[in-house]
Every structure is written in C-alpha cells, then in structure tokens.
Length: 559
Image (cartoon, rainbow, N blue to C red; front, side, top):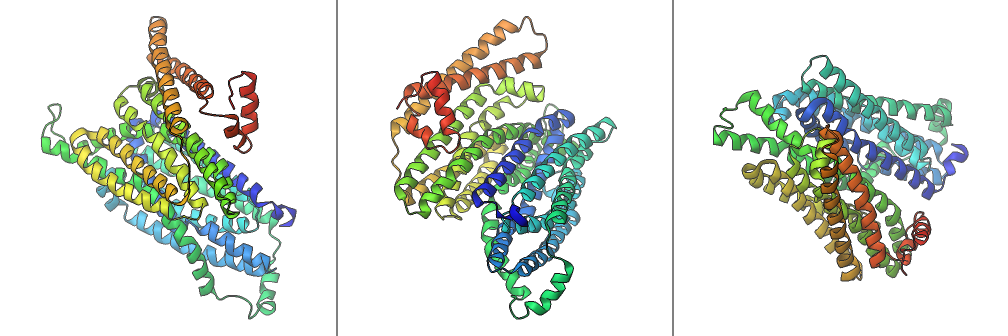
C-alpha cells in the first residue's frame, strides 16, 4: 500500500478517533429534525428498533476489525502479504455468513419481535433495517484489513460517508412518507433503512480505496499456492485466531446497547399493563392498536432527552480519547505515579463537564424542549434524564481508563450489573409513575455503573482525590452557574415575552442565551476558585496550551 501504509499508529488512531467523533455528533443531532417530521410516535418507533439492530450488529462484527488488523499486521511483519490477503478472504467469508444468519433472525422474526415490543406495527421497521446486516459485516473485514496495514483513512472516510448518507436518508425518506400520507411506521421504516443506504455508500468508498491500493493480483494469489505451501495456517486455525481476539471485545461492547433494549422491551409493555389495569384513562378504554399507539407516544416523549444526553456525552468521549492514551502509555512504562495523575485529571475534568451539563439541562428543560420539539410535554422527564449526563460521562471516561490499564472486561461486567438493576427498576417504577420511572431508572443505573467503575479504578490505581478540588469547587461553580442560568431564563422571558409572539422562537432565545451565560459563568468560576490550574491544562494533550494562552489573556488562571 505504498507510503500510505506506513502511517504511524498514533496518527492512525487520531484519524479513527476523529471519524468516530464526527459520526457520534451526526448521530446525536439528526433525531431532533426527525422527531419534528414524524412526531413522538415516529421517534419511538425508530428508537425502539435501532438499538436491537445495533446489538445484533455487534454480535455479528464487534471485535473483528481489531482481530483482523492484528492478524494481518502479524502476517505483514513476516513479509507474508499473501497470508494477510488470505486472512481477509477468510474473514469476509465468516462475516458474510454471520451477517446472513443475523439478517434472517431479524427479518423472519420481525413480527414476533414487534409483538414482544408491544406493537405489531413495528414489524416493517424491523424488516427495513435488517438488510444492513448483509453488508456491514463484510465492511468490518475490509476495514480490519486496512487497519492491519496501519492505513486508517479508508476506515475513517467510509465511517463518515456511512453516517452522512444514513442521516440524509433518514430525513428524506421520513419526510417523503409523511408528506405522502403514509403512517409514521412507514416513516420509521424509511429512517431505519438509512442503515442500509449508509452501508452501501460506505462499501463503495472502501471498494474505491481497494482499487487504488490493492497491490496483490489474482495471479500472485494463484502462484502463492506453490510458493507458500506448508507455511500457511489452515482455515480453521485462522478462524480460531480471529474468534480468540474478537469474542472478548464483542462481549465488552454488547452490553451498552442493552441499556436501550431494556427500554425497548419494557417501557411500553409496562405502561400498557398499567393502563389496562386501571381500565379507564381520560374516560376512554384503550385496547389493541390504539393502546399500542398510546404507549408509543409516551415512549417517544421519553426518547426526546436521549439526543441531548448523547450530545453532552460527545464531549466526554472527546476528552477520553485525548487523555486515556496518555494513561495507557504511562502504564506501559510502569510509571504508576503518572498513571494516577492522569487518571485523577481525566475523572476531574469529566466531572467538570458532566456536572454543569446535567444541571444546565435540568434548569433549561422547558425552553430546550419547546425549542427542539415544539411543545413542553415530558419536560419533567427530560429534566430527570439530564442527570444521566454526569454518570454516563464518568462511566465512559472510567471505562477508558480501566481498558488502558488492561482491565478490558471490567467495565462490561459493571455495566451488565447496572443493566439488570435498570430492568428491575423499570418494571417497578414505570408501572406507577410512567416514563418518569424509566428516567429515574436510567439515571440510577448509570450512577451504579459509574460508581462500580470508579471503585474498580481505586482498587488498581493509587489515586489521590482532593475533596476540595475534585468535589467542592466544581459543585460550588456548578451551583453558581445554575443560579445565573435560572435568573437569566426568568429575566429574558419577562423582557421578551411581550415582544416575541412565537413561543418556540422565544424559548430558543432563552435556551441559547442562557447556555452561553451558563458556560461563561461556570468556566470563570472554575478558574477563579482554582479548581483548574496551569498544571492541569499542561497535562491535556494538544488543547492544553491553547487554553492556557486564552486564560492568561483574561487573567483568570491560577498556579
């Protein structure tokens, strides 16, 4: 693959990290216009089905790109380009088979799965997304092959193209179906079909790179049967090696979608049970599809907060990508003092992102809800869900730290405990307090997962946590920010309400202005209190020096 294949590992990791963050950002934003097009029932239909597809996709492919890249790199280190290509061929075959199996399970089991989710209308939505499982697994093999050559650009560009095409498909097809009089379930099916179109275009990108970079001809492969006879591992050995590397990663990755799947299968069913037991609701007895649509509506209201939580988590992921490699590097050198300092900084900065994001969204839940979703239904649920941000961001950063010190499976085990806990809480709380119960269950379960991770970190890393710097100063800064945001919200509403007649525009001005005031007041409070020092910023790769220069200009940096 020429000089391109000799990219440094660090550069390659940075390219993949940037692509992953871009994809996550796009994935967090599109749900808002999609809900505006289809309404809350359409949002519910999509949010119920897509996590199931994500879980099956992980089962079919998770860990394979990394496993394939590792084995390909081993072959290349021995100068065996033909052997590396053979690993790709075997991987494509294996993943094509697993992809077809999971496609068949999802497509032919769609009606049963839809009933288990509490709504037979979801059948078409499930069938629509199932076709992606015929394409994406093969892409995983090709991406792993390129990564084994340390050529990350094809993987990164294909990921970005996949997400862009997916989002465009979601918005265009959902709009077309709604505009032409089809039900929201057809619109949701069009949205989930975005996974298929995204995969097709991403696959085409990979094929273009393959055409440009492939240096192994068919003649060379045929000749290799003579040249490398006796040196190649048999197919069974290659498959065993791929599974050996990939299964632990898959087991670690599969738990996260279970959080959403618990909601997909429990929230609507428990709400339906609660309504059925009460016999009457608003004077009307609900049954059949009318009951299903009613429960979908409330699941959609519950889902409104998910996009905002993902958006906040995007920044925590960015921080994790920047800091965790430094922790891993220090561990590789057995410099446990540096590991401890890096861990403490990563957790403290994550807390400084998650805490104000949670409080800010909780305070601004009503204007944000109206600004993004047109009305204030479910504002209290969104305010509760806001507190997921602090725990989910802490969980993600702490998971990265544990993986960096070699405890790869610990975060998955901790999250599995939290998922079981959430299921129990969902069944208990949703019956009595509907979607607010699901929101409380989510916050509590993520809190448990984050706590278990941090306890695990303290078991393996001797971190010194200053109560003042780690908790007291950030909490004080957050409370000050919350006060400023609350006051600004009231003042702006009182001042502009007589002038601006559009409620949605007014709430947009309130939300955006208050967010700006909140961020500014929080950052200034952190620097003035000494919660963030010059030494802290110096330890942040890439961005630290820029932040120091900016803070020095306004003279708010201590230390």
